[in-house]
Image 1 (spheres, rainbow, N blue to C red):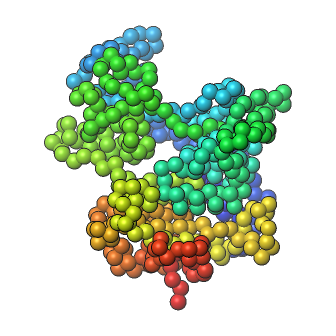
Image 2 (cartoon, one colour; image 1 turned 180 degrees about the vertical axis):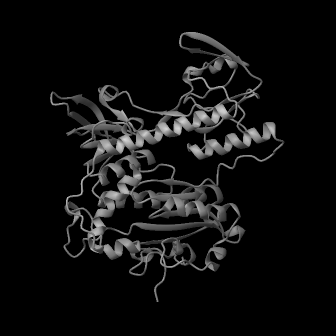
Image 3 (cartoon, rainbow, N blue to C red; image 1 turned 45 degrees about the vertical axis):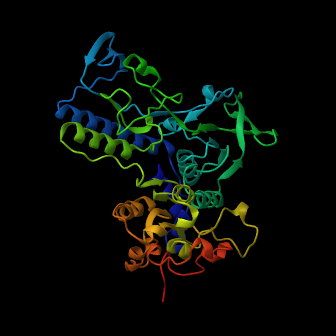
Length: 445
């Protein structure tokens, strides 16, 4: 769906480069059919892979009936399975809060990918990466989107980067309601949803009508139905497990993924943690999972990739006096050439129609270790691809000087990381760290 959204966004630019884009139209049903067919194909391949590796697969909920036994039911028949070791990898489920009408008529991010009809005017409740990704692709597909933000965007991410994502998304047409959350949702006779929103600061209430209300306000660890107490496993009030090297308080019961307290909720993290656990248990390995230098990407229309510490977290960890941050923001070359404009309703000055700078680069460095880069952040096209490569440099202990010594590939956005000179102490206004011209992230001339 993110890829589909990028296609939609390209129509803004195509006419400037000679393409005729009259009457472009998107068919929601055809897109969902393609998505679901792809998911079915993946699931089939997973089952084939399990079978070919002699893994018995049961589509059932297993509950612990003892420290070495689980029970489950398939087609009315009860089965028991015993094992020397267990791995819990049940992941998480979206939270729908106890708001009148929310659970009856609201949907979650799990539902949006299989909706048979287009969502229409949508209220997204939440400000996490899932919320913003959904809001982003729906906007580029042409649906009016409002995001209800309880506190801040992208909690846990670098603040400069979170604010930049919000700025670009707002300029693209997304309406943000800050400090507002639904108080009730009522389905009207015409099928539309009347939402009453309350301001958390003033208590003031407003109403609006939407076709869809999508909750992306966090996820919970799906451990409640496992009867972990019968195995002696300690479970935190939020359903998560505290582990040491993936082991719970019961040494032969392990966990990976979103159910682990304080660990990144990312599928590739769960995969690598599981692989390394298996290698330690069965192949003589001693390698542990590194949960700090984990590259990740937020797939909003303008992507955000990160690895290591955000600036605020680095200051907490190492001290402000030990951190030097390099920053730069610019407009990608393609946007510059196409003069992509912010949504018409937001244009107040006819001479200032252009979108705000859509790219941001940040390197967080540690002075006490010769400028070792402990945080990499990039907002811009293909940020996921860019960040994947730079993550190797962070794991290898690269310093800012090593970044400077690399010749940039021109004209790319990623070459900005080889030319950064502006530091946090140099910045007094936005102009201090904004490129006035140039070719994407590099130097021209």
